Length: 220
Ligand code: C5P
Image (cartoon, rainbow, N blue to C red; front, side, top):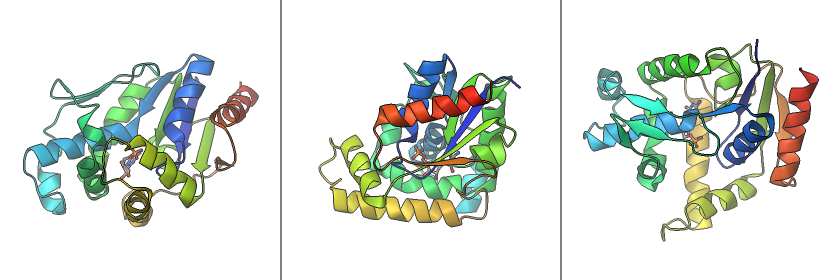
């Protein structure tokens, strides 16, 4: 199977930067599955669907047309043809996404789309269930972690434009999201069999990318 690199881990572990860096270094495509769950959540909020009501979310999960680009230098995400790369990063979406992504109908739909995009491989895929559910046969699986504090600091930097997003608030919201993502019934975040765990707390981005590139080369 041409190379698929499955990158899982909690929020703020540095998955996105590392995944894009690895894709660039190896000339692979890149898929951000979290952006797809965010896009689904954005659509639900836009259409007034109560996101805590799983039956209401399930009933409309087939409606939005979600398209993801796979260029690591210019990742794109559209819903019904509208570019939502900005709106999916707001705190409103971030705080609603775990409820939406815990709905099995949402996951079934997005996993199918993700497998279509992965196709014959040649891609780095980041998310929470890539090594366990989406691509369990991926030849390289990474479980990226970092201390809670390091993760909150990274997230707060991402949200620097939002005055409400202090490190303390971000840490609490992130802890809640990680708890929901790890304890849900459908495909909870967990380390896949055969995944290499990398703790990025004390590592630079370059060091993380180099470690994963080494793992990929061992599998050539
Ligand atoms: O990676 P990111 O933080 O953008 O993911 C947003 C949310 O999407 C996660 O908190 C999780 O609820 C959901 N997600 C998921 N499965 C994936 C990727 C993301 O449930 N493969």
